[in-house]
Structures are given as structure tokens and as C-alpha cells.
Image (spheres, rainbow, N blue to C red):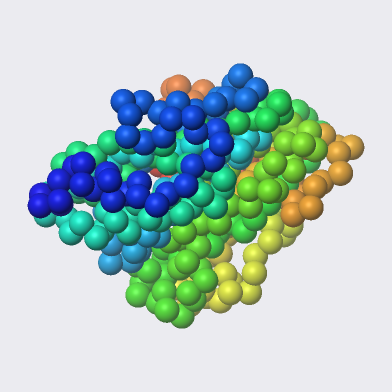
Length: 328
């Protein structure tokens, strides 16, 4: 990197990339200009830090780039939107081989283009570790945004996409058994959010929705907290495939810890009115009931407070509370 230089890397990262029609001015100017067809723009940002969110001996730079896009695009989709543009900031040690950032940029650009979006700008800086920060912009295309606060007692809770696979993949990588279950390891390296299912949920009138980034219980806890309700999950209704169960047996883990507490699947969880037909790809996994007293998240552990509003088979979940940014 110290030999190629900042602008050399930027030039290599944008070369050959395509832009959608919504990009009016792309990379190379002082700022990008992106069209917002319906006058509103969804914005989400997330960061990946080497050693905290990924390891280069477990994931290729291309996979890390694709994962960075997926986790941001899933946030846009969870609001009922479509990603239109990404802005990327990268930090790395000067000794980083240039091909690492080439492959990382290729992963980011390819994943963005598969979504019909473009990488419209960013920044590059020296840092002690590899850091990838992505901001996603999205369009609602005249939809009403689906927020966390719309769930109501009587609603159905449903899930689209697998839950627990990424947590299983991480556990297998840590234990050195990733080669025995490559699909689970791949789910951790590059999640595959079911974007179409999220848009179908928005079009069907979902009352609330979130992507499963912190864990199913934790993320449904955010909905419960914002909506002032209780979520009751039916554990038997949550899909768990044979490979996930086998991996749990191998590592002597309760598969529920992955399914209910594991994050980074970027599946989607949503609530629907009781008379709403679930769109294709969605499976009913619980119900929304009246709150019997909302925990005061400001008074202590926010993740614990949110999880206290999510019950599993009628009982508060006592297992892993999901991803927490500052848990050591």
C-alpha cells in the first residue's frame, strides 16, 4: 500500500465498475450525486474491524467485501427499500499488500452491482488494522417504510431465511472443523439475505421488520421494545436443518443457542396482521402479545432488557442474548 498510494488504490478499485442510472455523478469528484426518485433516501452504515468481525485466515478479502455489502443492504431491505448506492471507507496498515485491497474492492463492487447499485465514493486511510466502513443508500420506491415500532398484539411473527447458520459457521471455524460443514462456514463468511422476501413482506403490509444481525431473540427484542409488546416464539416452528443439528452435536452445543442467540445470518424477521397471508418464503414462528411491563433499557443492559420482552414457548429466553458490540 505504501508503494501504490491512496489514489492509485482508488483508481484500481473503481476501474471497470458499472453504475446504475441513479448515479448522476460517480467516483472521482469531490462528492457523488445520486438521484432519489421518490424524494426520500434510506441510509444505513456499518463497520467491520479485523480481529473483531473477521479474520483474514478465515475469509478472503473478496468475501469480506461481499459481507460488508450484505449487512448494509439487509438493513435497507428490512425497511422495505432497495439499495441504490454504497460509500466505502477503508483503513489499513501501510504494509498491507495491494492485492488485498484490490480483492476487497472487487468483492464490494461485485456485490453492489448484483443488487443493481453502485459504489459511488469513499475514502482510504492508514490504520493499525484493516477496517471496512460501508454506508448504504436506498430507495423506498413509493413504499411506506417498515419500522421496528409497528407490531401490535395479535400480530403473527414470521421469519424468512435461515437462522443459526452463521453462528454455527463461526463456531466451526473456531474449532477447526469448518471443512466438515462448508455450507455453514460459507454462511458466516458471506451471508445471503433473502432480499426479495423482505420486499414482499413490505408489499404485503408487514407491521414491523428487522434483519437478523444480532440474533433472532435480540432483534425481535428491538421490535418488542420499540412497539411496546411481547413476542412469544414457538421454538418447534423455527426451521432447523439437519446439517445445523449435526454440527451442534459435533461441538456439543445446544442448537437453540445458534438459532435463537446467534447473529449475522441477515435473515429477516417481521410481524404481520393476523388476517395477512404470509408472502412466499416466510414461515410463522410466533405471536405478538400485550406487554405486561416494559423493561427499562436505559437503566441497565439494553440487550437484556430487549430480550426480556421475547419469550420462547412462553418463558423468557435465558440463553445467549446475541451480538453486543462491546462484549469482550
